[in-house]
Figure 1 (cartoon, rainbow, N blue to C red):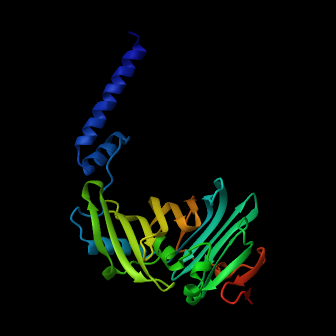
Figure 2: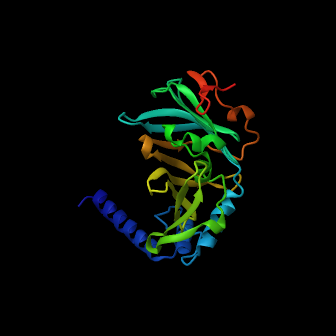
Figure 3: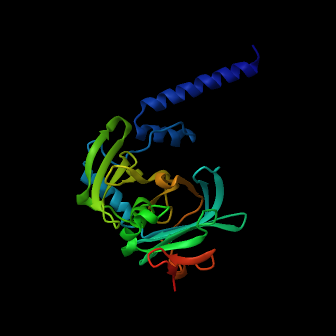
Amino acid sequence: MSSCSVKSGVSRRWLWLLLSVAAMLPTTGCRALCEQVRWCPYCPPECQLSEDATSAEIIAHINANADRLYSWRSTSASIRARAEGGLPVTLSANIAIARPRQFRLRASLLGSNEVDLGSNAERFWFWIRRSEQPYVITVGHNDLPKVRKQLSLPFEPDWLVEALGVSPLAAGEWSVVSSRPSQHRLTLVAERRSPRGGRVRRQLVVDTCLGVVIEQSLYDESTSLIARATLDDHRTDSETGIVVPRRIELEWPEAELSLVIRLKDIEVNPSPIPASTWEVPRGLGSGPIDLVTRRVLR
């Protein structure tokens, strides 16, 4: 047997021994071993919540993060978009979000504008260059119930801001519907009346070990899914200690539209975000057209 084979066999045995020892150690022991050998096998994450945490404690933990997160912005995002009957397209994007319902997503392909989706205090809008309606559609928040059936995209600004972690959860609204302790998963639901006039059901799936929301869904009165946000790759901002997901998947089944958003760099609580960020866009196709009055917004 060659000396190379002997060394390789010894290395493999040493590796398996180290992994076996690490697996038997508690998390703190595993991390101590990592520090001593300056190399780290897989160590289970340190759980942020106890196994018997109540729904109130879980909501309080999530809100401890959300209460400090007023806004975030990314100018280096990528979006993989799939629309009805089409092939997925990867876009470059800028995204900004702030309380109470400010949101802006602008995406482009090879420097050409493709998507503009947003909301401010008074109204929301959306524009998709490749859609059958090549103009900016806008609706006042208070007018949303009047035009629900006319919207090709069931956009819920309040839900989206909450789903992306900027709006704290109302503690008294939520109740537990299922628990999977072995998988560190807890599902909570809450009901409220939507701006569209009907009752909606919101559903949260929480990773009880990491203490973060990994999925938030919105259902209508007939339990049909309106929208879903799946959140992944949560990271802690080095300056603020605030946790923000770096991968976000948004789905609107009724519109057969899904967006997978990857955030390369995030500014947490940037100050200030220019007021123009929250203005209804002009110069994209025609419009903007108010869907209630059917007139160009002045």
